[in-house]
Figure 1 (cartoon, rainbow, N blue to C red):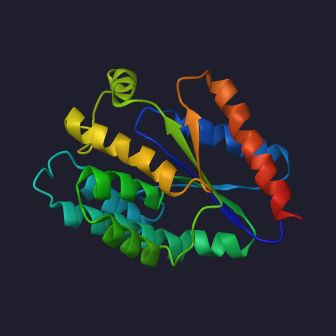
Figure 2 (figure 1 turned 45 degrees about the vertical axis):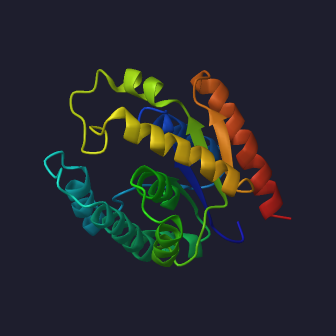
Length: 211
């Protein structure tokens, strides 16, 4: 590859992001690429410490602005320490969540100012945006059903359904705002069918990239 690129995955917990990220990584490896997978929040030592604060179910008093800034801080650290160097090496970086999560969860879910959240996060990522973003679409009810056997839930997962619906509706608004980048994937389909759909999109992006 002449240059690196970011492929990000978005969706509610239980949507199947992890399964599809692993499948895409294997597919790219078979094609001779060596993709790197990073998760958010986290991806670095500092980011993982921030993650533990953000997701700690005891931190119920966290202010919405604090939450948003912590996510942006973790993201900035990951960009500086991991993502930028990988892109400079020409790598494909697969991200389990990126700044679209802050737009969905903090701008729409927490009712923070959209333009402010976007501006802060673009600064955190140095205006580097994904080449393509896959939003794996399942409803909050479907998400809850898939997660009901989980042994523990984090602070955000413990929010009531009204919050999760605001986040879900937020993701749908992002599809309208960024149609050239965000691709909706029906998360209720069989995993193999979803993988085939994602890899088809990625193949087209790779073909365009080497023209």
